[in-house]
Amino acid sequence: MQENWNNKHIVFFDGECGVCNFWVQWILERDKNDHFMFASLQSNFGQKFLSERNLETKQFNTMYLWKPKSYYLTKSQAVLKIANLLGGIYKLVAIGKIFPSFFRDKIYDKISENRMKLANQKCYLPTPHQRKKFIEI
Image 1 (cartoon, rainbow, N blue to C red):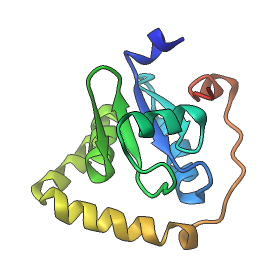
Image 2: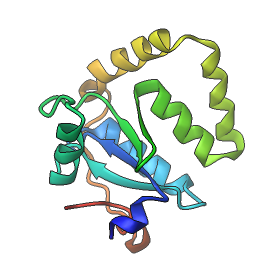
Image 3: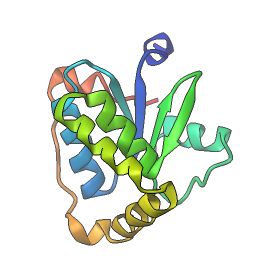
Image 4: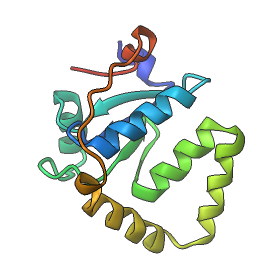
């Protein structure tokens, strides 16, 4: 199955966070060109991704965007790349690049700190097509 991942961007997210799950759903609904797959950071796959890169494996306050065999991005860089890949009007988010990454990441971190207060955990049921985009190994 990993052959399918090499041409995708994998979004790693906190599977226990309502805000994170909202954004996963938001991306799924706009991913018309089938760019993305998803894995929670708590999953075996997510933990392996983190461990292999010597990243924190117990705190899940950072979203990662991984293009296998190419790169991975974090925080605001990941957000900007996702918007760019979604295309259309979402490419306008790239205007955020006028701000230095440390400033963008400060905003990201502030939202991340308060994310559990911003949204309750919601039960989202993806469609069968969307379910295929989740990596559960």
